[in-house]
Image (cartoon, rainbow, N blue to C red):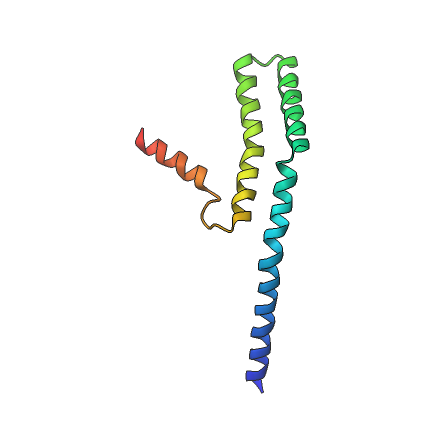
Length: 108
């Protein structure tokens, strides 16, 4: 009797994984298309401009305000990269920027 339960459990897991492997990429692609839409680009631009403006109005020096705004925007692009790589199904790409940075540091 236990063998039948094991087989049915295995079949159930197989079915679940099949559904997940079909649904997750479609979900990620939907998220990516909303993140990289024209409207999202406008919103990110407005957010960066507002962020920079607030820094400047608070007395932040130009160089620091610019660097902080660049870092702020890189958060969006890093998230986009992660989503894009996740949607592609490729493994090991989530930390490729970190690995690139480490390689560059080693070369210096």
